[in-house]
Image (cartoon, rainbow, N blue to C red; front, side, top):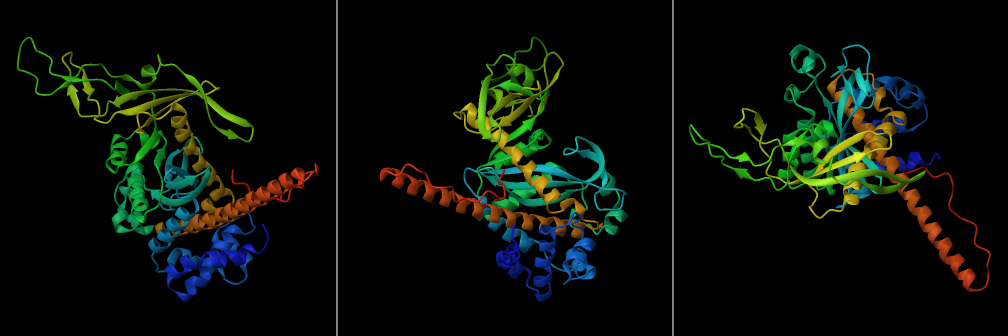
Length: 434
């Protein structure tokens, strides 16, 4: 990346700086973001200040950790820019979480908790992430810290970490995600389907909240989740003795997702082409109603959850390794299985964003302990990432245009009798979008 990116950054940041409304902050903000983008292994405040030369540690630290300014206007500008870059009615809003490994116990939200990115329980901070994606290009638009019970049960600890009063309550990751989704919807950002893994998909209230908002969704789920066939009816069984039943009961027995798809026909599906060829797995799908309604005692004494009102897709995936995954989606009943597979697999684009935010922009390098500092640093990394994606998309557009012009000229030469094709004019060192 040539050095002219710094000038481009200043111009690109104009709407963000207007939202800051403070002369000093308008000068420090570009320096902080440039420090995240520029060279250097560590992107915490002290090494960035040492490399910058213009602003010292105190100025950068005050900007991100102590300055009195509201992040919401910058978050709104980020959503607007993300929509310009990748907003699409056929695009995706991907909900996930990412872990920031930490030592000690004083950094806000740090605790021994499961980190999906590490595949194990670790001492870390866990942030709910929101990614807007289209055409396999992600732009991160939200990172919100999850506070485990060891924090929400300890008011003095939260006060020391300067957790805002309204955030000093126990909230699940699905609840945080719904709040973020509402923020995205209110901004007018365009997307067509919400994607999430089983950590969110296993929550009935989360799925119901998405449906209540009129959203399409495709989420992971446990193979043990009970489901009913779509045509399950509700009946009043006649009791031989005693009082008549007060509530309906299903005329079918719920079975696990794994068992429901066990008898279905599995098809080998290719959802897109990767760097090593077509990406394929075996998939099966059927229409079901999830057993997550109110619970009743059956005539045989079992307590069983009633079928949900909404009919949805149950999708299974069999990988070459032998691993099996299961998903639910409320995409229309006539959706082809290839389209279901494509939507489900599109969720993995957020992993690319997580990796680049950490490896290239230092998302996990922040060394402060406060709620405000962590969220502002995360916001700066997301703005930096959106800038890089805008450059990559512009470069890809120029490359496509050059290749198109070369192909047209080459065709004209052939028509004129010149059989020698033109040499490719696109450069080979453009940043990858994959």
